[in-house]
Image 1 (cartoon, one colour):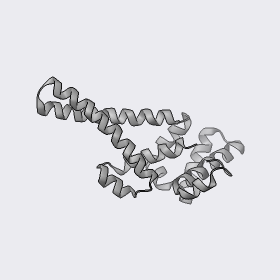
Image 2 (image 1 turned 60 degrees about the vertical axis):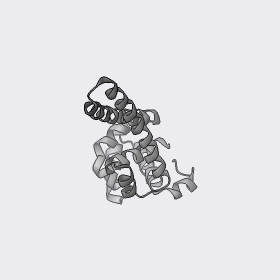
Image 3 (image 1 turned 180 degrees about the vertical axis):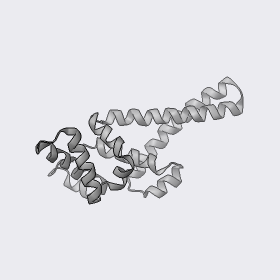
Image 4 (image 1 turned 180 degrees about the horizontal axis):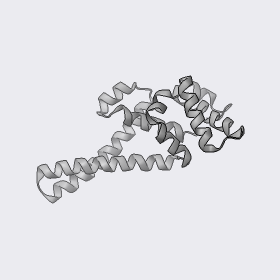
Length: 160
């Protein structure tokens, strides 16, 4: 997403283009002598003022700061998706197991819930790539806007 690279791709994706502007601004601030922590904070403030990734940054400012500080990468994003899927799987597994009332039901429910959570995450990512409106994704997969935005942001961050 560096300036001068993949311009055709950035023109197709508003989010990717805005992320490119965002990361470029962080680098400019570092080049001006700001410490990373200050460069990130200034860039977040400036981006919100300029309307660049503003809705996401407004809701998830501290998460974004933490991700950038810890050099967020694709493996971390996948790990989080898997962890969320596992958590969803555990919840679904427990619900199914309690209804069935026996050990085998709990194991199958957990396994199926985990698989469904991973499958749904992949389907949501595909919908994001296809530029499906967030509201449609939320309705189709019965997920919150925050889940869609987190997956969307992780995709943008890891496209670099």
